[in-house]
Length: 167
Image 1 (cartoon, one colour):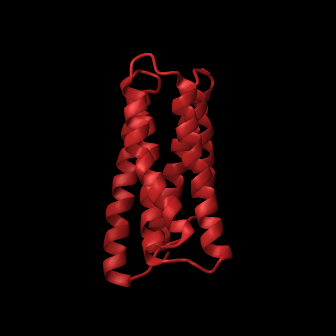
Image 2: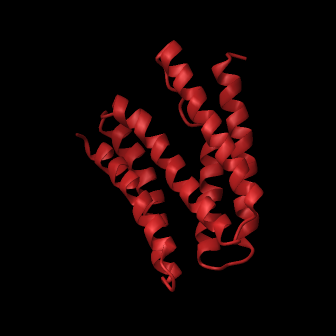
């Protein structure tokens, strides 16, 4: 068990905590945003630690992107359920992430290789973290960052597909 893997496991454990806090009536949105922001920080830290300490593991390679997808889907779907983001935004993101997870599974079985995160994917993640955090805090213009983040995420998904097909 590496420190990077421990951070990834904490991020996975934060998903039900985030959902619970989000479901509480009257919960101060700053607490919900704090949990969400901490997941983003652990996402940055675990990758940095794994690479800098030469502790990249199979578990981390698979669990890290899963944790990222789960917390982001939990946040966007939760916001859509309250009407803070359009439902179509959550549906598009969920469809893309499910397709990507299924495709990654097929790709792993057939080639035993994981495609690393692209700059486009990292940009989408940054836009989504900023936009979702702002939306949780009630900053109305943040919805545009969420929509832009989903758009960039869709482009990143197409790029991963292109890479997987070797074109």
